[in-house]
Length: 263
Image (cartoon, rainbow, N blue to C red; front, side, top):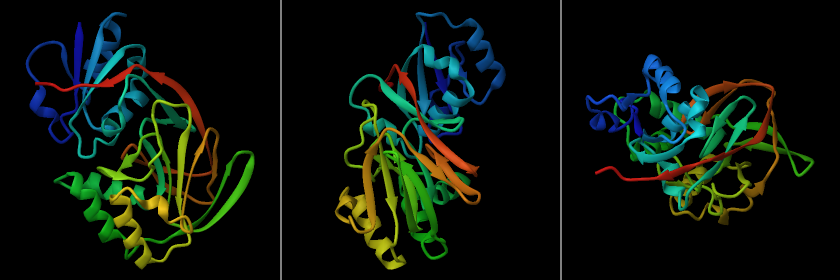
């Protein structure tokens, strides 16, 4: 049997629900807990939602990781869907919170938080909130450790870990990211003024931000620690959370995930 999990809060998730027993509202804790007790080892799952829906389910209902998952996009961003080109992906954790496509501290987290609070969401919402937020954003200093070396960056606008190429509803931030391999792309925008941020955003949209090597770090890592001196808002696949202290990256394993279309 295939169970279809739909998020009624995503962009079009409620359009797919029906009255049959194998359609389950992901926001209904009773139904999700009941599914955990009744699903059989050979059953499959179809998840209708966006990156945030997948991230929420992996963190709150990890039993789904035992089953084959078909992913149908129905969110405002759907960045992971755009990155999938074969079956199965690796997923990651920052301390105790897991993510599938991207994790970020800084400007991108604030943009995601503002989009989440907006009544009408779409791909253009991220770009709109990004341009509106540039004026008031306050860059910060950051220390990270990778390849067994500690590095310091000044005036950081974002520190993003990318499993997929895209974030923010189709912005290509990491050209070489691949959710099917065992490495993740670290992207840090630093030492950049507000006017230059506008130019960099344009090049992110064009998928050419890697050309700004003076201001934009991009490299593959398999281990990472982020040292936070104060609380920072972070985004996990678009869902936001306040973090503090040291954050450690972990490869959490493999998910039997592939994208699908629903007629």
